[in-house]
Amino acid sequence: MKQFANDVEGIQQLATTYGQLKSEIGKVIIGQDEVVKYVLLSIFCDSHSLLVGVPGLAKTLLVKTVSDVLDLHFKRIQFTPDLMPSDIIGAEILNENRHFQFNKGPLFANIILADEINRTPPKTQSALLEAMQERQVTAAGVVHTLELPFFVLATQNPIEQEGTYPLPEAQLDRFMFNIVLDYPSYDEEVKVVKNTTIDQTTAIQKIVGASDIIAFQHLIRRMPIADNVVEYAVSLVASTRPNTPKAAGIVNEFVAWGAGPRASQALVLAAKGHAAIHGKFSPDIEDVQAVALPILRHRIIRNFKAEAEQKTIETIIQTLL
Image (tube, rainbow, N blue to C red):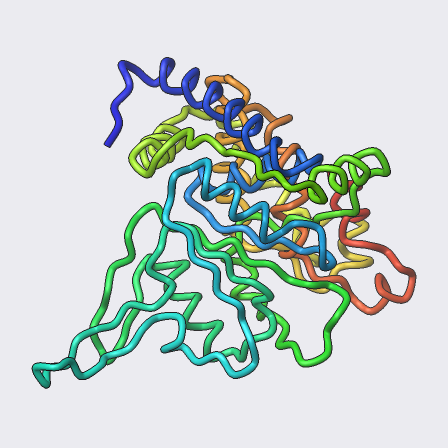
């Protein structure tokens, strides 16, 4: 694993690397700066992300480009209603010597693009869940460890819900970020169309490899954080839980279920990562606030009154902040 002279040098190197990665990804992905930031953050924090957006917003291209600049092994799994757990994990097959051997599935890669994850039945979703949480898969009673680093970047189409299986809250909670991709601006779309309708491909440089990423992940976890920042993060999450001592007024009125302790852990870890990529040696409350929306968005469930009055999750979170 890569070693730094000290953690100060490590943070400076991470901030420089982040700038290089954004610049390189920007050669292919026009705009979407916030989206790129959160995807890279989830990787540096050793977590997973859910990308939500209508078709054609370059979700797949983004993940592929990220894997290219990181010099990692990339696999894309197109989730469909007939996909079985063995299709993604792998299965025992009989070889020419009449012995069973494990044939690895597409989950055995560093970056997994789980395309349209809500199109597959819960049985297959749960197989992915073990890989995400435990960094291992089980086939025929045998546990197979996945190669590190391991990230799942899943995509979901929010408008076409026919023939889909909504992700259960327990699985949504495994994703650090719920990243919403919006339409590009007019100028960005003009640039996208110009760049993608010519007979020319953009060359991408590889910036860092697996050992660098693992070193950065440990570096972020070692980063010191003040007690008041941790307390702010925990209080923010506690304020999302209706009918509890710390619940905010807007939460009691519009929220059915609030975020659990995993949200507090994600807020603190992501705040450390956010501070690190900006060259800061310790996170502050502003770092927690910067990552709060994509962390809390999928962990708060509105009640009927919120839906009737069209009170969005985003509005509730912004009010809490």
